[in-house]
Length: 463
Image 1 (cartoon, rainbow, N blue to C red):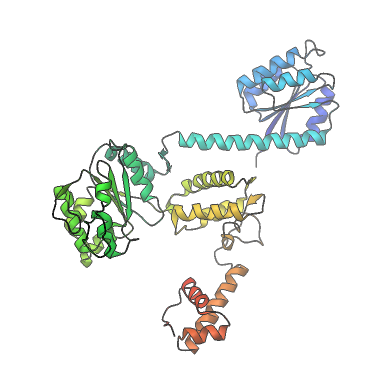
Image 2 (cartoon, rainbow, N blue to C red):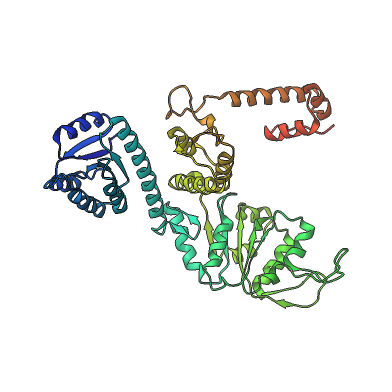
């Protein structure tokens, strides 16, 4: 690893050489005895740190030359951390130096161990500032669309398509695994459309019982069915003038698919129990994690509806295929939740970063966000670890901080495997009788059901 560069500016040669000798094992050190040498080294070496004695030629007893040089350094690069060296009787000079842009000041005589600590702290602050600038720099290069982050070419292509479709009223079908951010895409398209001042109405077609979904979408008249005490508008009418986002559209039954198709063709709806055709001005955006083309072959999704919905299709890649974005999203979520829960972390270990990149993230962005949120709340460590993220099974504790192995099992994993094996044997021995197996294991029936679901143990029946 390359050493950070430090420039020691002092007109007394023996002091400069002593500091260089003391710091050279940690830093690549350079010496300057006056303004000209300092400027030359600045331009050539671009040091991260500078210790600056204000008493420089032509008048070492006056701080004017040193303060002027400090101004030149800050104009050259404000990110350089300058520690001013001054006498006890020159406190005013030290305060003036801080006002100009010095990071800190230190009173003579110099204690190298104390200076070393100040330099380490300054370098740590500088690295945090550098990471923050780099992160903001990435986000300012059109590598995001609203709140959506995407540095990978696939995401850049999606952003380009979003900009084009946002200004139109064409239907958009967003596909991708659960947790990839399909609803965020829909929200950004709406926010960048001419309908942005009107409502965005969202409904998850897979989260509402089938017998209630029609009423949720199209509304109902008073007395249309038991419990319909008043007329009620559905999501279509509530989104009038705006956008209706149908998440998990692949879960619609065939009768509701017909009604949706009719709306797309005629822009009218009919409430349950009603006879009036109601004209609604709504843009439709849909999303699914299903393969709708396969559903068409299986007879569970209408071919004509698919072509109406998929005028433009945006396919979101899974997080595991967005390696560059994973670390950016990690930093964003960590910063957000650390601030929210009043926690402070120094950073993350290299092994943790490796495990984050190695993990497949089956739950995608939603899983990453939730793991980080839980880690921030629960962690008592100075740095977020793989264990905090429950990714420690990807790391070898024995062979170093950076080493990853494929097959090494942690103690937790070994326990889970043993527990699964015992439950399976007990179930088989008891002919998959849940009550008897729970009794033999000394646990409750609900606990056994949870363990069966966790370990994906099939072929059992309640009893």
